[in-house]
Image (cartoon, rainbow, N blue to C red; front, side):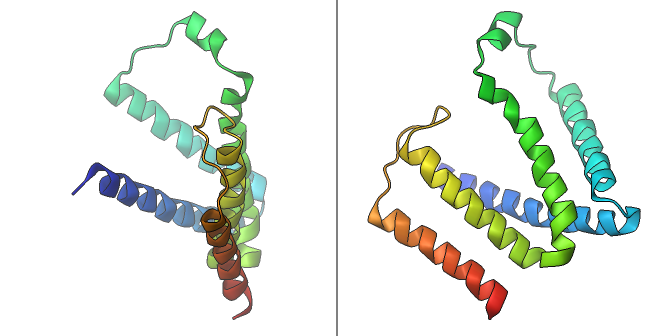
Length: 149
């Protein structure tokens, strides 16, 4: 098995985790009655998991200079993750898991095409090509099929 295949399988597994997470958070919201509490407790689980991983793997602490040199946008991952968790807790019940994930994937894909095309956020440039546009349109068509067919 090639490295690319292993990485692709890991990415697909992460996709499964996103669907499971959104569904779990949606049910958490139902049980708790409020999407903010569902998101809060879910993120507590994230912090606990990260702390356990840090304790298990003991990575070297980055020095203060490295932290100061990071771009401002490096710090938005946490808040954006919270938005994603809150969206799952708030929207899965209303949309269903499949439509929610299809819309999330569609949004990820469209944003990723822009990030790649303009080489934003430290990414290597990957110009928008007709094939990439057709691929994005097929994902949008998939969302429409999931919603209406």
